[in-house]
Structures are given as C-alpha cells and as structure tokens.
Length: 146
Image (cartoon, rainbow, N blue to C red):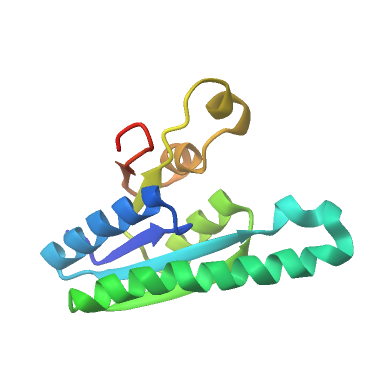
C-alpha cells in the first residue's frame, strides 16, 4: 500500500510520536522512510547578517532531528533517506513529497489550543488541507498528558 513514507520532524515530542507511527507503518508495508527537517528561512529575513548564525544553528538541530529518525528506521531494518532543507515549512514538505514520490505523510500535531492556534496557524493543518496524498496526524504527548 505504501512505498515511501515521509515524516517531517522538528525533534519535538509531537514529532517523536509521528516517527514511531511512521516506522511502524513502514515496517508493516516494507516501505522506505524519508525524514525531513525544514529550516524556516522565511522567519529570519529581518535579522540580516545574524540570520546566517541562526540558520546554521537550525541546520545543526535539523541534522540531529533527522538522525534520530534515521536511527529508528535502521533499528527496524528499514531503508531511510534524510534531508535538511531551507524554505517555507509547509511548501517545502509538499515539494519534497512530490519530488520523492512519497505516498504518505506522517506528522505530529502540537495540540495548540485557542488563540495560539488561531493566530499562528498550523503547518500540519496546511499540509492536511493541501496535500494530494494521505496525511496521518499523530498527537504527541503534551505536558497536560504527563
């Protein structure tokens, strides 16, 4: 059913729950796991010369985040591809999925409520609304759940 499963990650607890689901599904369908971290360069345009320091730090964070996915996939004896890209987060996820023949996206939700969700929007929500392929959303454990 699935051959290529994309799990966008930011290294958060919500992402970790999505990674677990993605690896489990990939094991069931003998699918390749794609781990993607997007450095949101659109958010740092106003910083000018300091932007490169921030972007470099985020790239390093991204390498760690996709490395965690890579370890989980390899432990499950799955093929895995990792990428750290720069751009607008939701657009980069959709572009990656299209360019790599992904047939399922597995994403965590951050469980924002109220005004935060209204004002900030949600990358996951944008992906769900825009993706031409199935998107599985996985709620991560929140501080309230602990």
